[in-house]
Image (cartoon, rainbow, N blue to C red):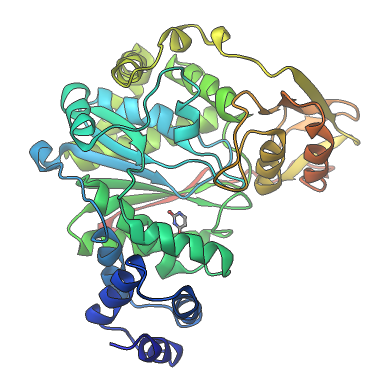
Length: 437
Ligand code: URA
């Protein structure tokens, strides 16, 4: 197998064989194929695409490139959830204990935030003591005892994806359907859960800007999951405005706790109930309406909140913070952004708002940047709301006052106004199961 021939084949729009795909993934992971040849192949894939069979081979090659977690002892009860990334997306903090409180075995590896999107691992580190790194044995034993464990991605899980993603990031080849699909599904398969619920975000704050593109990605991932004998379903959800009102690690943790205590904003509650119901439907094999009413009851009764505290304690966190959120540190400085006009907010650019939060210290632009856990944004108004000139639309928080000016500059053009109310946007566009494709 010559890498030159594989590049040529894909450049001409031909399909690659299993041996060719495994060969380039293995060779690249071992350092035997140089970046420039893999970059050329990735670019050819961006232009020529890959069919379902090639995408499945690439997914399996990524999965097989490192450790795989064996969760077979839990039978069909294991379930994982993955979001394609968004702004204000704190759903895992709610959905994981909610599904576990219904009897699902939630075994999940989460990521850190990068770019304008936040990551669950950073949010969990807001709790003093929470261990995001466990051995394989500790991870499985936590799932066995508590029905839930959420850690950062283990060092040797899907190492091929780490290398390929880093290369894609600097060669403008992130935005390719088969590459995104195999990257996400390769990691999910290696994590071992039998069922996988995908939250495919769509809109200004996500990779997929339109429902059509998001649907195409979701369908491909559900299909590849089924080809790999997993029970996969996806929700296409709105990311044309941030989810909930809080953006930034501690701010989001507090909002998640409010939901678990039976409060919290409607959009966040609805997406969490829909995701948790789908997780229970797939892994417990119960009808979706029954899963939904059990999820609603678990939120209402406090069962999910109790499971949340049990989970945090099991992973070493000081749960007094979950019982009294005023213990969390608050940023030293705040700065109000006020409306310059009277009118209805007709659109919010979630990506710009996410980047503003990063500028405040809530996220990182490179993997080695450090994070200010109490930095972030509280939205006072969202799309559809009426505002008066001079009224506060959002408050920015940071421990570094000098950051407000660059953060405010990121917000230029982030909000649009109109004289009449905007059309109500859908929160959940559709659910895609393997029966739909
Ligand atoms: N998230 C991933 O894990 N991989 C991609 O390629 C895109 C989003």
